Amino acid sequence: EFKGPLVIATWNVPNATAKAWEVLEKGGSALDAVEKGCNVEEEDPKNSSVGYGGLPDREGIVTLDACIMDHNGNYGSVVFLQNIVHAISVARKVMEETPHVLMAGKGAEDFAVAQGFKRTNLLTESSKKAWEEWKVTSEYKPIINIENHDTIGMLAIDKDGNLAGGCTTSGLAYKMHGRVGDSPIIGSGLFLDNEVGAATATGLGEEVLKTVGSFLIVELMRHGRTPQQACEEAVNRIMKKQIHRKDFQVGFIALNTKGEVGAYSVHGGFSYQIYQNGENKNVSPDFLSK
Ligand code: SD4
Image (cartoon, rainbow, N blue to C red; front, side):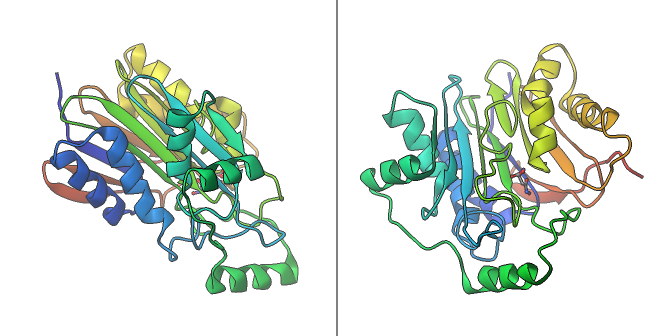
């Protein structure tokens, strides 16, 4: 049986996977690794689609979505969370400290504060400026890869062979106020089964939600597909219904309990980070639209 450590994450996030690796190498759990790894992107003001410095919605308000899942199938999630940097850590508290799995908005924020999280204004000067420039035309048109795709979805296997996953985002830039994407929704933005493998998504969340992409990938792996084949099938499933519309990006990454990895996206430009055998690499996977 394969034993970690192994960690993969969506996009070019070497600092996040390095942090996760540091936890795993010391014998830490996959759950701690994904939380600490995702925290790195959440607190980075330069990452404009996660946590602090995330681009706001069309009203100028930053709202966060995040979730986390452990090897026992436990799950915690926050949606439409405001004023708290480490959304994934709040999601973990929902999982560990409440009888619930999903909390939203003001209730989730009050819960976070009661758990000791600090309120912070998440809108940085530079994301405020970007929003003000966007307001001039107020055109809502997600642009492939460049608009805001840095949502971090992270999957890890620890030395005990246990899986964990996390996903954290400020969602699509200039979304409607109140919009929630795929990232915090179990089965869509993230799913894992310790006996099979794990998957996570990035890109236009609406398309991932409509196909329950991450759950689909895990189920396909359960029935014998490799992580690569399963990611390809999930993208194909989306595009079969979208033959007239190709102007959006979706990317999936997955791993199985053998330590095999797969990734696939609608368009080029997607990449994932992998830290394995002491080596931290960024990989550009194959994609559908050529
Ligand atoms: C969303 N899937 O809210 C997220 C956005 C994303 O890289 O992945 N951006 O739809």
